[in-house]
Image (tube, rainbow, N blue to C red; front, side, top):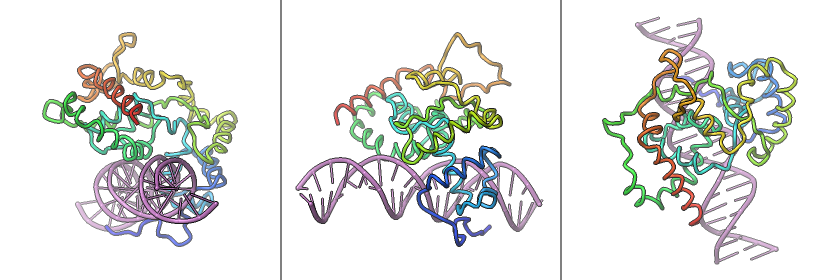
Length: 254
DNA sequence: AACACATGCAACCGCATAATT
DNA sequence: TAATTATGCGGTTGCATGTGT
């Protein structure tokens, strides 16, 4: 099957997005919802390919994205999941719904790899990452967080939202107020989880960590834990904390 | 102050796979 | 069933910015 890449088309603009383009894209998605990317350049007049539109939306304009300032806990989770899953950034990102796969990938490549190199002897000694038959790779982990999963936090705080996106955040604030459709679309995402426990809360809500207060769902409503989840929640609950501590110590060492 | 080098991140590219015809 | 199209993912690149000399 050979077909020309969509971005090879003549007249397709490349490079950084302008605030104006962002607004056009956001406005269109406000009206039609995300998806049907192919139609966006045609219908909006944006000189961008569908891929570019989707990427811009999912990585920067979508509500609920937190940018920068990875917490030690998030770092620990990423390190942990990367050790188990490899470079399955989308799968890893599904466990950190405020983070995009691109963001996690960048953070891994620019920060965590180096940190781990420093810490290699320690990790090798203290942490045996079970990749053998005891903890087989489990593909359904990617299904854990889906489009239907409520995404926490709409915190579009300037400190966590880069560059021109500040303008967009204002636009989006207006959007969420003015559009009933988009309000519906984002309602679940609007819960205020911007406090320091937001990630824990999310993990709790998704049964990613144990909580006796929350009754267990039956298997139809909620799939059983994967090996990874069990491992994260039970046997290795201390590991992430350990990684967090190491991460912190690596931070302080630099 | 000027330059070179390093770093971080946004965006692109190519491929894989799912969905549609 | 095969062909085609649309979408998603991971690797990589290129530019802007920071840092050291």
